[in-house]
Length: 497
Image 1 (cartoon, one colour):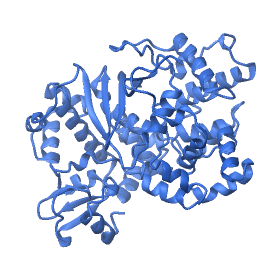
Image 2 (cartoon, rainbow, N blue to C red; image 1 turned 60 degrees about the vertical axis):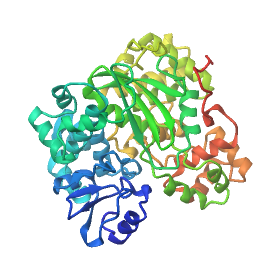
Image 3 (spheres, one colour; image 1 turned 90 degrees about the vertical axis):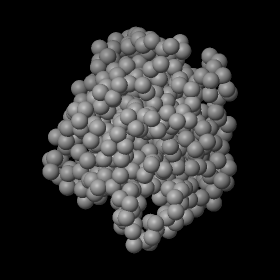
Image 4 (cartoon, one colour; image 1 turned 180 degrees about the horizontal axis):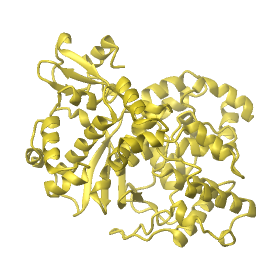
């Protein structure tokens, strides 16, 4: 979009927040870059130039605006809506792969040479993988500086910098303030600090957002010990590269309140990325809803509750296991099966609030699972053990950089994986916005009530007009019948179900 100057100028002049994250405005006279919705007076057109990423702005010598803080914009929705190599690379960079494995590690995961990855990212984003990772490190450092009391040396290494000098130079260059000055500015007007060890931050999103289906779904399907709804927040444990964490996410006007407790602050970038992915916060709801409204049978559902998101997951392997456990059983039964697996094989953790007890077991921990210990039909035991073996040995990948169609083919080749299981994993674990569930019982019932074709083949044909947002159409169709997944739970600690 950044190449369409006229459209970008209109967005800047109207201060349209829908375009935050799509492009960035760099002002030639001040050498500052802003988000399109920056509240300051718009500069003259001849003084504006546009870039596709914050990293490209920084690489061109511009610093972040102190007023609109463009580095905190929602991520571009393109990376969640596309499955090409650039989108896969961006999802991996957001998950911290370059910091942990370097550019060669990123290239190996994508199946390209490092030079090819560099060339593709430069062509589309105006910055290579190192510059993009550096920009992300700067934002992580800013969060730690402003929300914790950690010494600057600890923050430097937690954010992924190789030295304190590089940390200091990068912060000054990107924000035009020394790290200490950033902390002083943030302290002015800061509310009372939270519990020790808790990182509190706001996760931005593009409006509108309907929290009912998003948090309602997560709470209704929560695995006891791993997830819970408590005091207006969805809480869960996280398995992260350097340790584990506990996150509490609460919907607020204009943002999601996020409280993170991490055993290792180096995992902050990954924790934030996975929480944003879980809640589908980088989506463009206006584009999605406009497309779905073009169908007169879906339009009333969209108008009733616009901005529905696809509840996703923090770990693709975890969700795949849970999808198998949930085959042909109720939501409550699926939770029960998953809870037994967690108690038997999950890693225990300490939760100061007492509700969470375990991490969800990794595939490696389930590799020696005794099928006879599972209270499942024999065929489903075979499905689960085969899935776990494929995830543990790496022959099946469901990570951030996975090719969606390759993963679908790999899943379909496993015994017991029909279209519903493959597509629900594609929708929630892989994040494909066009995944569709025509065989889902709730979808078929909704289709019949709305006058849509009821057979899977005919419904799939009709759904072609909803592409590439069929996963969002699923969320709206599920609202036709009343179910706990469509509503925010009541405030206070959720009663045991």
